[in-house]
Image 1 (cartoon, chains in turn green, cyan):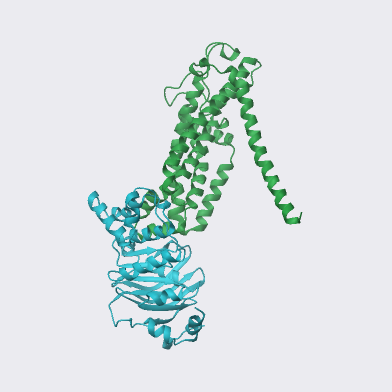
Image 2: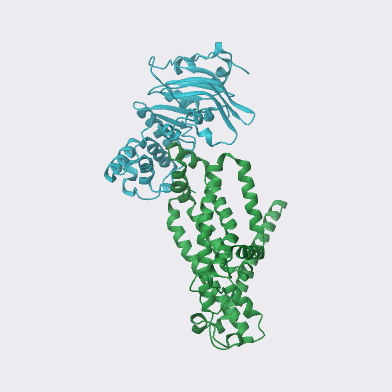
Length: 283
Length: 268
C-alpha cells in the first residue's frame, strides 16, 4: 500500500476510535447512573418532599429539589434569553462596521464564560449583602442568569455571525430598517441556532451547583415565593452522595436520573420546535 | 496607470438609440478601503430605461461602484466614500437623506440569490409589508403580479407557502428579482446575477432584463463580454478602479479607443 493510502486509513481509524470512544464513555456514565439510580427511584421519590428521617434513608422524596431546579433554571434562562438576544443582535448588526469593538466584546464574553461558577456564587452573595437580599430563589435565579448569559450570548453570536453577508445586503436593499432586519430576517434565519444556544444555557443552569450553593440555599420545602430559599437537584445529589447511609447514596443516583430525564425532555421538545422553524432557512 | 481627462468620455449619455434622460449621475467618486483606493475619480451618467453594463476584469471595482450607488458600502468596515452620487437630483451620499427610502428605489440582485428565511409568498410580500401595505388581497394580488413578471408564477403557484430555500438556484434568483421589483424600484442593480446560474437560467434572467428595461433602469455588472454585448445599451469599461471608456456599445466594442479595452476585447 502506498503512503497516501496508509495515511488516509490511519486518520480514518484514529477519528473513528475517538468518536466512538467518547460516545461509549458517555453512554457508560449514563448507564451506570441509571443502573445505580433506577432501583432507588420510586413514585415517592419524585412526588414527595423530604420527611423527618429522609437523610437517614427513611420516607420522603426530592420533589422540593425537582421543583426548585425547574423554577431556578426556567427563571434564569428566561432572564438570560432577554439579555442575550439583543446583545448578540447588537454585536452583529449595529457593530457590523466596528470590527475592533466586536472583537473586544467577544473576548470579554469568552473571559466571562471561563470564570468558575463559584466566583459567580460569591459575587451573587456579595451583591445580596449589598442590596439586603436573603438566600432565596430570586437571588439564585439572578446569579445563574449572570452565569449563563455569556454562554448564551456567545452561542447566539456565533449563529448570527454565520448568516451570509449577502442576506444582510439583500434585506437592506429592500429598504428594511435595522430593526426589521434584526427581528424579521436575522432572528428567523438564526432561530434553530438560537434554540440550541438557549438549551446550552439552560443545561448549564439546571446542572450548576456552585453558583446556587450560597445564593438559592437549600431547603426541604417547595418555594412559594421568590423570597424563599429553594432546593436544587445538583445540591440534592451533592448532599446525599456524601452520606454514609447506602439508601441515601442510592437516592443521589436516583436524583441524577431525574435530572438527566428533565434535560432530555427539554432537549427533545426544543429540537422539535427548532425543526419546525428551520424549514425556511437557506443553508 | 492613469487615464487623463482627454481619454475619459464622460458626461454624454450616448446610447444605442440616441440621447436619453439621466437617472443617476456620479461625480468625482473616490472610494477607499482603509488606505487602499478602490475607485479613482469615477464620473458617470446612467441613462433612463436602458441597460448600462459595468464591464471589466475581476477586482476592478465594478461591484464596489454598484454598491456605492445604494450605499451598501455603509456596511463595510473602514470603507470611505467621497464625491457625489445623485439619483434624480437627490444626493445619495448625504447623510441627511433617508437612506432606507433611497434604497427602496434601487432593487439589488446579487451574485448568488439570498432568499429571505420565509416562504416564497412572504419573500415577495416582505418589501410590500415593510412599506406599510396591510390589505391582504392587495398584497396577494401584487405578489402574483411580480411573480408573473419574472415568469415564476406557473412554476410556484401551487407551493407559494413552502420554503423559498427549497427552490432551484435559478428559481431563487428570479424570486430575488421579483422581491426587488415588488418594492417598486426606479433602478435595478444587478451584480453578476447569472454567475452562479446554469446557461438556461442565465438566459431566462437575460430575457427578463431585456423585457424589464421598458419600465426600469438597469445597471448590470458583468465580467462576461458576451453578456455585455447581448444586453448593453450603454457600456462602462473599468480597469483598476478607473473608468477607462464609456459610451454606446456598438462604438466601444467595434472601435475601442484605448489599448486596455482593445486587449480586453481580444481576450474575451
